[in-house]
Length: 246
Ligand SMILES: Nc1ncnc2c1ncn2[C@@H]1O[C@H](COP(=O)(O)OP(=O)(O)OP(=O)(O)O)[C@@H](O)[C@H]1O
Ligand SMILES: [Mg+2]
Image 1 (cartoon, protein in one colour):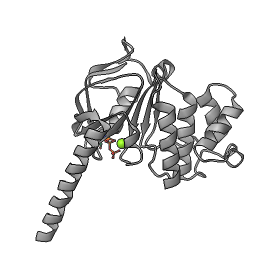
Image 2 (cartoon, protein in one colour):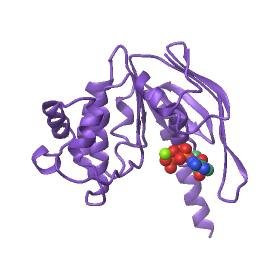
Image 3 (tube, helix red, strand yellow):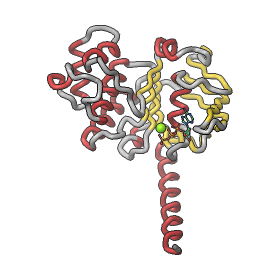
């Protein structure tokens, strides 16, 4: 069980003014479940992921993994305990090849597993293993390599931050299938899939909507999805009406 108790995050904006990004988030996340996290841009999803991973230290509250208080642990310590985070915008590690980074993710030399994962994310090992992770790969390729890394890590807690961002439609379908088989109904795994995509969210067991730093809704995927569709429809109508009056 991953438990967030009263998590708050305040950071300074560009002008040095404090800004409350997360407000009193309480969440209990159970093993065996794939959770879809969604909500408006700027709502706090990535910040929440970074707090769980230890990249941003929370301002208030505590985090527990299987009853252990991990609130003060570093990113490395949390990674060792089995928490992984796939960035919304993955960093580019200059000087490393795709094979290097996937070997690090696997934790040992596993050429067959590495090749298999690359194929699963739609990249031919022959074409990619020796490529440099600097600037020569496209945004979508980097994102797919990040997915291969996260699949190789096979962690207890996995946070996927918009895995579909910048990835072509064929690969989105592939990733959605991969996550469905790899992360759903895995008795000891907790997966948080941050997404806005209609191919991704329906595969989740539960959905959590984060808006303005708070948990706005939580429930079965079907229920939350239906509520959101109704809201989107009424918002679109409001906008259209406003534009007519201009
Ligand atoms: N390091 C930071 N310093 C200051 N403000 C930040 C920092 N990181 C995020 N924010 C602010 O926190 C708010 C939430 O950002 P966050 O990236 O968590 O949103 P998000 O829900 O992931 O949005 P999106 O759907 O666009 O990815 C935004 O207003 C953002 O500007
Ligand atoms: Mg984000």
